[in-house]
Image (cartoon, rainbow over the protein chains, first blue to last red):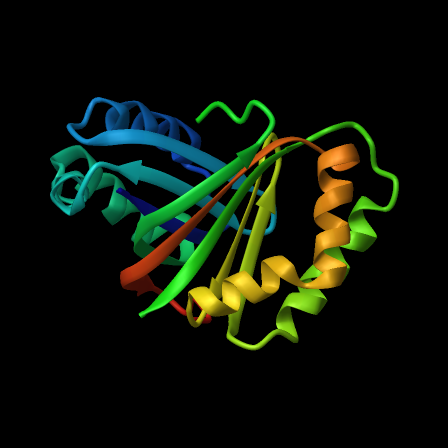
Length: 100
Length: 100
């Protein structure tokens, strides 16, 4: 069993550093203890799902200093709104070579 | 508490009826008992997250006759690969008017 953090967001029209920070956050997340993977897609809305070993890893990531700065800028500049859901993955199945 | 079905997919280059069926599946899902909502984004990969009241609602939706036909066509034509994860939402928080 592991956890998913489902982040759904709507962007503002402000780009100022957004892409660089988004890329940096993925890079930084990958370095965190308990990180298992991340997948992301955006058109009208953005959905990023990151996967973590346990709730403690998720809390630590949320409190990461560089991540906190990004979250602050997310609220003041980049996102119109967002919702974060933390969910425990109970089962999974796949088709094809989905690169689990 | 409620459940999320996280569906991550990679498309083939075959379009034959894909968009119509994708739209129809959202419409049909909305009519199902226990359906709470759905959000979707696609660029390189697609991520669709649907939300359900309980595991029984999710099982019933997976076995819906019209949905089964769409799943069959998904495997033979539309998807290179996909992975479905069923997860129990344990907490959530939001910023702005996220239309929960």
